[in-house]
Length: 379
Image (cartoon, rainbow, N blue to C red):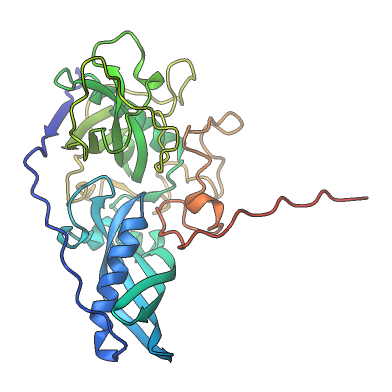
């Protein structure tokens, strides 16, 4: 049976964004904890330029130490990840927190604030970003639910690549889009369909007009403030291939029209790690590209349907698919794995060495200075 692909494009041209709210006055009073946390949350989200926006869940601590006419405040904050990617212009306070069944992500943050006369500023923060429940705990709660896998999973990235290719077949776009970032990938085993992958990823508009002879993978992104962005969710299975791609578009921040003969500016130092889709033309691709049928649908805010006894997530028992790498079996494509152009995945420029590879952590601020090169060993 011929595969039926569903491509739903949701325009956000009429997206209503909340106005930037005014800050409450931050003082050295312990009663000012909420206002200080509010200031901290805006600062954290303003500097968090990858992954998803966060919202405050709870204030765990608020220590105030008098310094001269002002004070130093140390906050202990519990944050929860929202479903809004950082390319989404919606204010983080208006974003929904991810549901537990979709594997919530939390961050425990220590925030330092200096309060002076009529002034308060964030001086430092560090966060520990983790899953609220581990994959093992999720399997115990819901054996048939997909679980988070590393952002550089070869098969997961292959599913993203197929979705990006399908996205660029949409003739209503003015330009081709390229992959900006993979937000998250979940995977689970389904009887008849095999391993299924449910990905979320951000796309950015390029300088290549739709229909040009240049392959989309070779196109360069427009400057972040002048580019349209899209956030997409896709579902894919190793046995049946790509099933669905659902995207919503976000308009550019800078809508100033170019003058006659004026070309798009070139951004040499983009703050966002743009890249092209994995396994572009000429690079080859992992096996198992299938056709026909379709996996369960992964929608916004919900989760893929359970297998209802007909399948299970990885590691959920015997008789299923081979385990993921690191659980006793060889990884797929062992010995010839290709690296995604955004990989190797070094969150926070390599300053977080033990972070969960399936998540986008909140990076420490200010960023630590460059690490010195190790001295060569002498024999």
